[in-house]
Image: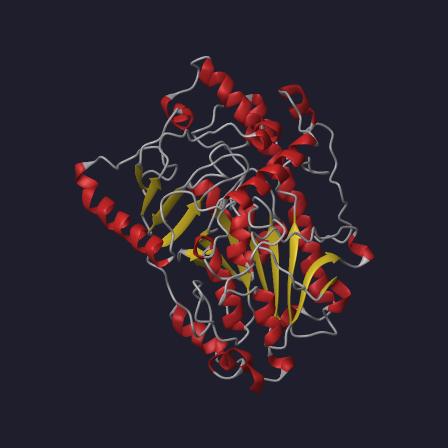
Length: 496
């Protein structure tokens, strides 16, 4: 039996999936699915189930085995606030002015424009209870972070509750859990820590002991996060919620690597996405469909039987309204004190990047990164000494080409720019045209897209955060990775 036929056969047996095609009010609350998002900060698809051999993630691997794993899922932006703004509205951040990092938060900011609503408001209007979980049962021994970090002023109440104990008596619910472990600064795993000598480094990084320590600490942090996910999933089962709860595990944006977070290379926007949806997803399925962060919102609404609004960019990738994408778009604008504007589009094989300010370097000076990521300091030091190879030197160039084109099949690390290749001119023209059309649809134009009021306020807030201080040198950075235990122990954990 084909995958499509099997999906139809299984999903057809559930009345709450059929309800997606009719009025939500006609569906009894008990027959509508709960939806739980588990969001990891700054995390790429660095799990054993994605093929990494230098860490153990048994709980997330089990979630993948019980659901569907997506190999081409991407955030709409390479930084949390812009990506989360798209995730929680289903609209591209560039389409409603949410594309600059931590912007539009000043007093008197206009908030969301007409037609764009918070996802939780849409769920509430359909009778769902909403929660941003920070407080679990004491037995778990940890809490959720409760992060929202949207690039807009929101005067209402984003969620109904922060307590796990409110979920069972308030079904159906839409809830999210934010886990911070993969966000810097990392922590060593309490047991079976990753071995720096066995870490598999990407080719654009120098093989330096501290770079290896940094990667190992990142993998350790993921193993700590995996234990927390296991505890949450176990709790779902113990409280009888697992059978009627769709679980979506995702990253908010890509890993904070040397060419990751803050950049539109694959590592900056590539995220893990695992979906366990009883009766909808065939266990153990792997999909290479192109998935955007806005599609996660669309899929959640669709599976809950809620009609998608008119002003919506997301497309459901599961259920009876399932759609596929031929192209996927990402955008980068101001991040902290770094002004920039970059746009990208990719299909299943090719990726086109447009640098609207090519005179700027890839690696602008940035206080946060310099104070938390030892790789930046190591790479700059070796660059100055002339000790990097051409692949590693590329990212430290003083300027960028206006256009970049990569064959992701032949060059998955985006090291060989084919924008000037005559043989690939037709691909370049096609993707350039797609990007320009997308920008036009979104009212996204070259040039500054942030008001002076918002920019001044954001930079002032950034300066205040910088004043709290970061490590100033390699010795201080190294100390962050030595002898650290997880901040919160995980007591309820089944790693089998």
